[in-house]
Amino acid sequence: MYDEQQILDQLKEGDEDIFLFLFHKYYKDLVLFAGTILSDRRDICEDIVQNVFLDLWSRRCSISIKTSLKGFFLQSVRNGCLDELRHSKVVRAHADYVAFLGNDMDSLTEQYILHSDLEFRLKEGLNAMPEEYRQAFELNRIHGLKYREIAANLQVSERTIEERIGKALKFLRHYLRDFFLWILFLLYL
Image (cartoon, rainbow, N blue to C red; front, side, top):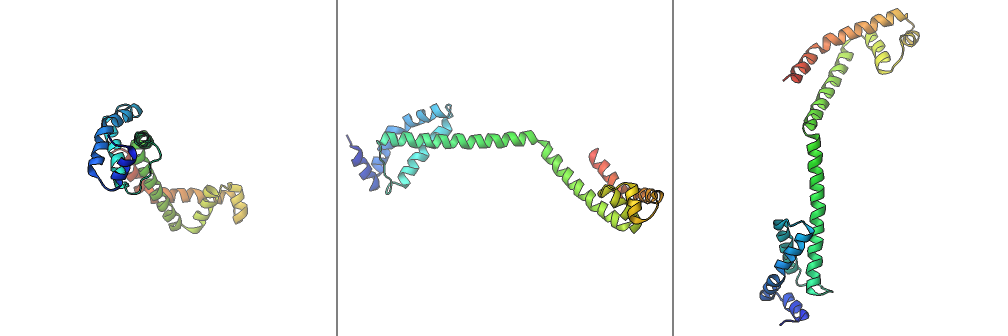
């Protein structure tokens, strides 16, 4: 029939009949071979084999086959199957991750938005309150100082610091009242 070098030479010249000959000769066996690697997912096996032939045709002028044609086809299909397995593993891992997160992703987004909004409104509230309340509140709640330390630092009594922080909390509760009502409304939708 044909010797392999003759086939390669004719293929390089763009001989479509030789290409069709190779396709018909190897296609069915290559699909079956791919099925042994991919657990008989026929449609994917056929796609991989067709891609091998498309690649062969598109690179026909520059292709250099160092093994037999059958060896070339088997190795190309094997590589295509391994690429598919890697790809499907990544897709499955991504799907599992998305399924794992499920509604948690929406929940995390909502939490982030609410947290950001709360932080913004809290800063607004702190800036709106009298300076001595804000200063005592920040030293205690943000910097973690005890009433005694704040009193010594500001040169006032502990009782004064207690009152200022109490008034700061009352101010913030009043300032953030609408925001907390809105959060409660969203939580119970």
